[in-house]
Length: 633
Image (cartoon, rainbow, N blue to C red):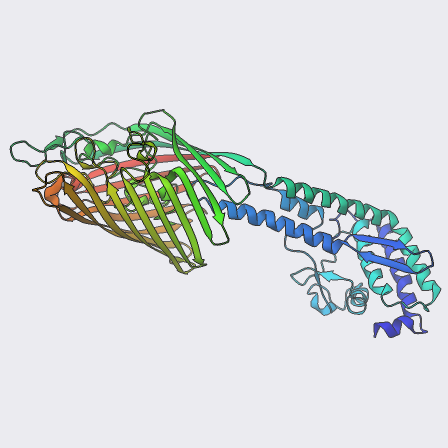
């Protein structure tokens, strides 16, 4: 149809070209205001014998540039995914994609899309004064584009650059309809149009060259070694009090002891409530990327926090109830910076990620839960993670994450203790003990996401314990054991090993309500140094259930209510020097509410109720109030 009209004697094409020329001239006289640069850049030139050669080159250039921007955003997203516990990769060039998009005229809601009928444009009707012109350009010359939402946006301002690009696209289609025998007047009209817009076309070529140079620069620099400093500071005001005197095992919160006459654990009485405290904890991250898909994490911690509720705890139960996770010193001393984490994560192929390092944060990769994240969810030591996993909080070793499908992943790790709270040197760096000596743990976790709003995690740990200098197992490196254990008769242990099974879920029931919980079972085998005393065994379980309220009173806010039993002893209490109490079961209720004041500042009041503290069924209730303020940068 188009070809017949082009070569016919009615000079329909010639009339159209005259109309295009007049239309262009009138547009320039109208003085349209500044818009975005067109998404097509044109290269054109005349041939000496009068034939015309027109090449449209911007579509390929724009496509390459768009892909480059998408790759930058994809790379930044992929690197950020390496970090789920207050870490992220260094950004490449954060505003690059949007800057380049603006430069080539991309709208925020999408690029232009080719249409074949003017009826596809929802905001154009036959009564519009330019309807016939639009119909010709769309249906007869196929050189007009609409937006992805099927609109033309005819009221939008136009620049000379945009008009030159659009006109040249139409001319390109028109030239394809011309044969050597066509009227010379047609060729002359095309020549005049191109000459008239030669300056604009040259400027567009310059713009494209500039974009090519910028793209080449980004390609050569976006994966250069980049280190980003980020930090978060937690400030706590905390108070704890009990209804009356509290029973606790041990001569203090760190040292257990059996009565030399009866052989029973020594029990002390705490009569006074601790004082109200005001403390802080700061984490500073240096996140470095060498390739854009890897991440070297170095985290420094410093603080002064010691939870008042620890004054009520039995030996070995330090930080086990009524204690926000970030209410800690950061190391063994107040105000002494320590290395909390040092690890390197990198991909192997498309589905496997490896993390290696002398101090890997186990909780970054295992037993996560969207409603118990220590920064914004149920945030105590007992609520933010399973109470019977893991003995090695930070360790030397390796973690492997295999994405089997988009709804199934497998995580494996081996770690040797390297916790920053130990006063002794880590075993992995000690030639006498080495990477496989001391306390270490093997972990396997299967993560299942059957629906977008439901996450299930099945976890197993195998832990080998090294006894302390007194021949006891427990204390800081004790999970699934709470407290301290000996051979049951006051004697020393040679070693111990434990198996722990844990189930963890979070379920976003509606946009504003979520459910979460954990159940774990742990069995610890004890091996006495005295050959006549047989192997001992301690079995215990724990449970947590909770509800979360998302965006409560403000977008980004989160309230949680959590009930838990951190260490319900099933059997083996005779082996516990502390932690067994009189056979009672400690239980807790935690209520927290995080309210963001700004993007970087939030407050989080929390309330904790502890019943049957230290597993003494006759202990009075303990109450803890905490006000946390967070500053992130």
